[in-house]
Length: 256
Image 1: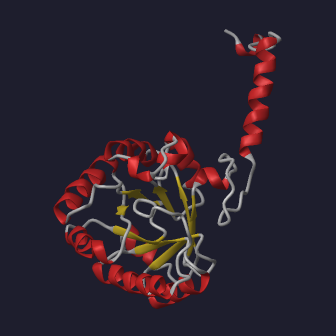
Image 2: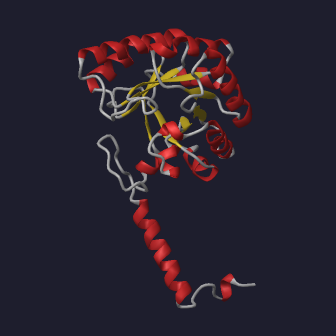
Image 3: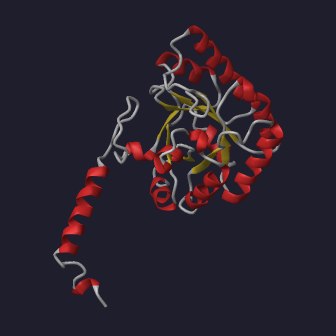
């Protein structure tokens, strides 16, 4: 059974644990606990201080993904296709093949529903595993608001989730989707839903790693900070700087 089929088989059996990673060292730690590791275009804001994920390009995603690949042994590795790399089926297939070949990832993730239906079909036809993404779409939404409060939004997300499954995606990320809607979508699909700000009723969860560990000073409603690593790093660097200034480091033990 392929990694993708094993992944889908977890539906209604065990919750899916997912996190983002942008480098080998972090990926090697996450690999011990995650079912899926995403090289997300969120690296644009997390690492490069871009105002939008739309500024992330293909070469940046590929280079970070190559690093992450070296840290993963068992987890499913998925790479975000950045903005303007899948505008047509031909462009999508060309760029997805490049990502798959250069990073040795297990699949790619695309944002959108009905508008990219034919594009996803084309990718799947070319044997490229695809993860969908509905709800809040950072690559195209101008405002960051949760989805599903309005009837039209709800109907569109339900329709799009069914279209994505029909097109052949193996799972769908639901971002900032209202609880009852996320639950309904999850129940109506045979594929997995991975939530971020989309309730406990999804088949699994994903968070940006820097948010999880408290490295990002920002606070978001959908994030639970499991550590305050920012404070720990600060104390560590402070101790190091004191030792250097007092000529306590390096000592005899640290010297040749």
